[in-house]
Image 1 (cartoon, rainbow over the protein chains, first blue to last red):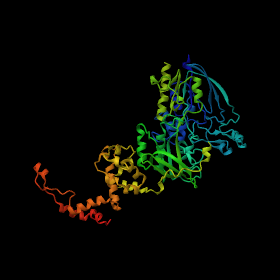
Image 2 (tube, each protein chain N blue to C red):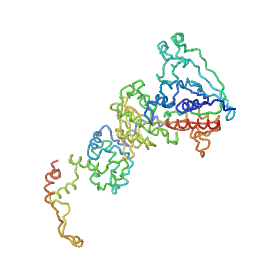
Image 3 (cartoon, rainbow over the protein chains, first blue to last red):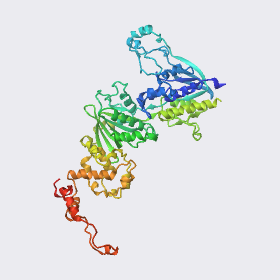
Image 4 (cartoon, rainbow over the protein chains, first blue to last red):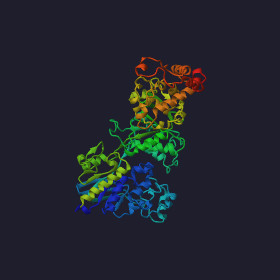
Length: 418
Length: 180
């Protein structure tokens, strides 16, 4: 019967990776499909992930098998025989009946064979078409960009000491039969281009929180020094605005849940670990649920300025700074600031393709995210017959929550196979 | 859409923003360094203090707003405000504060700072003068109330002279004489 069929996991972010490894460890084959060229999803850009403030690269390695050396298990995703990892790939169609799905996958060309690649860097020297996303990237391999066409690539292919490069690799289409589907498609950070009042996209120093996370990441271009995207000058004053597109009936009616902690985490990093940066946070409500209240308290103690109110107007200054007027509803006064960086805590929205997935599988929608099949059952990971969802595919969630949901989905699958 | 293009500038005449760059960012640290004020920055502006205050409804700046103003650095406005002197010091705000901010004590610190700058309202100076001259604010008279309660006519142990002598040597005298 279907019990020997593998499980399809869509998305190799925090939730998808956890589900894949948990299934594989339980002896169930998993097909992990990822659209991008590295696993890890949005969490890779976080720099430090709450609640432990670990660098996410360590976090992901650590989670899979506690107690065993992290680095060893960075390679688990490609070495674990029960996991079939499909990078640069997408789900094309899903047909069949619950328990016996037939899925066609568009598998991207595998230019680099990760099991052979030693990341020696020879190809990167030969051609610009090769680059290393990060020393800790997963799969552990360089990435090839076919659109950059230069002579060095061919030479690199020939000289690669482990013969890991195949420039003529072609995309393929695969058909697989799976018993269950786990949707772990994650989220997308809304780019608030339509909210003209915030001027996103009009001025280089108006950015989103995920963009800020990349700027302050020590692995980033500036080595973690907060700099203005406009001219690379060090940032002295930062202003953050909460609830951009969230809790807004014109955009997304729900609370994106993690942005408050996300913003406070960044505010704390900027004020405590970087020199001379003053941070102001404009908010409607600070929703640091659960233990995350401590981020809020720490932020206040380290001198982060909190302004309850909304932004009235933004005017670019001549030197790349931004003059911002904020209405302070507690004082009933308008305050005028001059800042270097204006950071929008933008809503988390369902990623591209979610609507199509919901429609093709006949699932419920919860404000655009995947809806729970039976809300009364409180099985929040069960979204259909033999269809599960976990992580931010179900709606905004933090890392531990995504992991818990992934394990819950795996547990449900194991129970159904008894 | 044409509206947007015609917009020539912000309606700055409608609002008169407080320029943050002109505020005293050291004021927060100054207050925090004073006794009982370490918890100042713990304030999360819940307004419990204002809810507790028995007289804040007649204040222009409510207690939570004064704390906000201190944190923002509005030194001039806080130290010149009449509210810090109107405070009854009933300590209800401080008792109820969920973040253990010593609101009343912070207002005492503000009063001390205001006094150092000579910003003491004339009625307070008047009270100081009264204390300096009489050693007490209310002269206790041998009236029927004391008699009804079976108390002796004079308050036992009341030594107004000692109070007068002490106050003369303290800042109260300097304030009354306008020396500060």
